[in-house]
Length: 67
Image (cartoon, rainbow, N blue to C red):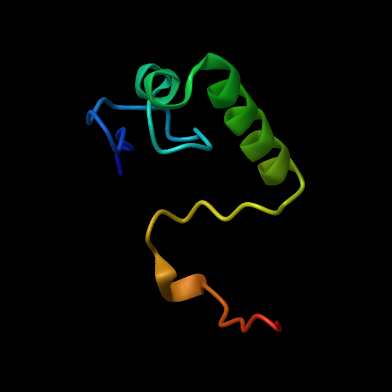
C-alpha cells in the first residue's frame, strides 16, 4: 500500500511516523514544531508506544479510560 500525504497526496516513505509530507508539515506547523513532532513520534515508535496500522482496526485492543 502506498502511503500518501493527507494534505497534498504526495507519496511519502512507508516507514514515516507521520501521515504528511515535510513540505505540508512545515507549512502547517512551522519548522521547529514539525521537527519536534517527528522526533517525538520517532521516539514513541522506538519505545514501542506507537501503533502505525493505518486504519486496520482488527488488531486494536478495546480499552477504557479510568477518569
